[in-house]
Length: 69
Image 1 (cartoon, rainbow, N blue to C red):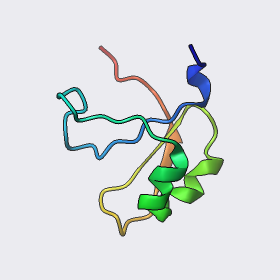
Image 2: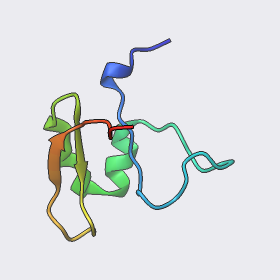
Image 3: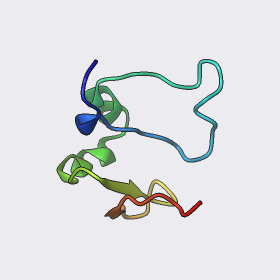
Image 4: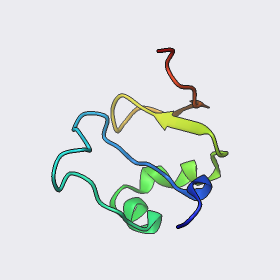
């Protein structure tokens, strides 16, 4: 098994990724090919998350934290 430290999770933040056929494993190059605006996120350090409300908004990059349970 590979290390999770170099893995990326890409989501639309809307659809449930747990549904049958809802998730795919892709090389990040293919994801950037579909949306080149993701390319600048390649310099994001591990443990950070980027989000934006719409495709025309600037990326907001912040350290990832888990919500308090």
